[in-house]
Image (cartoon, rainbow, N blue to C red):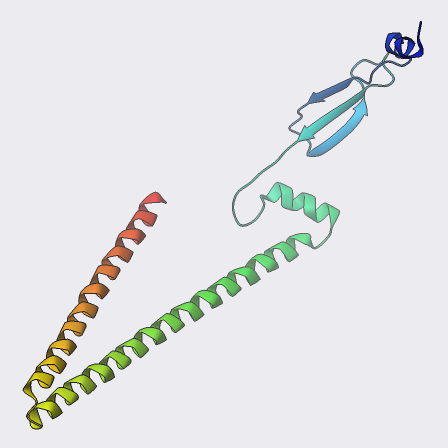
Length: 169
């Protein structure tokens, strides 16, 4: 018998470890204990418990466990939650103020450009350039009408998107 065939025919010297996995709702995490069968000294029992929650803070049972492990942890968690809320509100406030500023800046710029074009058309009429005056007046009116209609369509689209988001909640 060759050496390789002897290796293949060899029986294992030790028994495999028996693992029993069960769920116990009274504990969290992993628990390792003696095997279910006391005669099996190599066996291990592993309990794996998973807990999940949704929302801004953990439920009170988990908070009390944090407090047992690290005194003051609950206060830290709630302080961080409050700081995050303040930070988010500050960012939203900045965003709204900047959007309002941009809106007013756009209105002011549009007003200046429109009045300048109308003044240029009036000057063209004064100089006797009727074709240039017509182009200035019609171009200004057409661009104002386009901006107005396009702005209304965007507002309508935003309202519809918000309504969809609100209906999903």
